[in-house]
Image 1 (cartoon, rainbow, N blue to C red):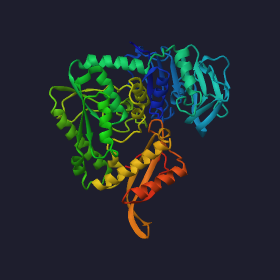
Image 2: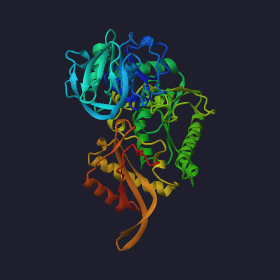
Image 3: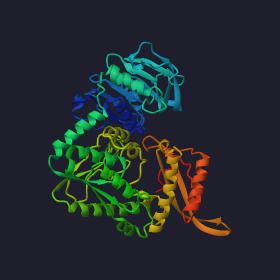
Length: 511
């Protein structure tokens, strides 16, 4: 089935991924491409959205897209930088704003009977984020909306299906942002809303069968949502030709290797569990630097996985749980914040000694969509609702060098914390939680004796995508009980602290 597609041109905004996700929430397929790498088949897209940018249209470093095959030919929505770009280079005026327009604002004027603002009323809250402002509209520009501080908050170009806004409809703080996107994409551009988890499963299973045929595929399972959903999709497509390998790196949560392995077997997956704990701990002996730890864990995993894959005969494909943000973050766009943030471990392929072709069934979808696809596939909600867990596991939650004793200690602490969140009905209200073992000892008193033992930090954050996160205000009673349980039950720990840093400036993990 051919879906209508929306093209999002990225000018480096930190919110570009959010635009794509909001469009997907409307059951419309969207793709992000760098503004200077516009797809050659632009006619295949039903509408185009221009993102914001940290750059100024007035600066020497202004980003110039080639809109010759888009403007006036395709319905186009220009957000923030896009709106200023159209104004500045089409007869309008953009000037520095007297005050940086950042944060919440309310629409004080909306043009009557305008399809773009259908079901949106004056007073609606929007989110601003710009230091320049549009002083005068471009040629043929028609004012559609204002706020108290920003006269030209929204406009359209007469004679074109081109709309422009100086606020961000994609962020949660714009209360009618989703409605505005729907008004533009569905009401004005006529895009079909047919991109659903059901259609994704059906089409992906068919695509895997066409691509892989009767070949064998090997997949490394992590216990996480992405690799699990990828495995179930592949299993639905090729059954026993899928060979799953679940490696215990010795840095998983308490009893996780055994319980997750049983879950996988119960799901009918062809899975082999490999306990390589000692091999990983040996590779990590004496290593303290976080990056060196990540590399040691990554290299050990590749070696173990390769050993196991080589025991299988005639395997042609390696499956990976790569998701869309991994792909976006690995494509350099503009030099702005959404350009290459990291070279993702899933993208860019394999070491030379693993000569397998790659199949990535989740490559086109976001994390929240992965969960919806998993639900469509009938995967246990408890497994789909699991908090994200870092690839290096407890290896980056033990600050300093790693020993078997420290792993045991942190596994016990983590189990008390996570089980407590579940018992108190708090687990699903938290996006990610975990405990960190700190490389400090502190003085304590137990009974009549002085102790000099470890300190652990508990961390719980709320987020939608991990790009930004706020610490969670957990009840004092819960923290008090958790602290008591940890100190009383975990030998070697005599102090518990709670991390109240948000991201940014802190990261979610400590290493």
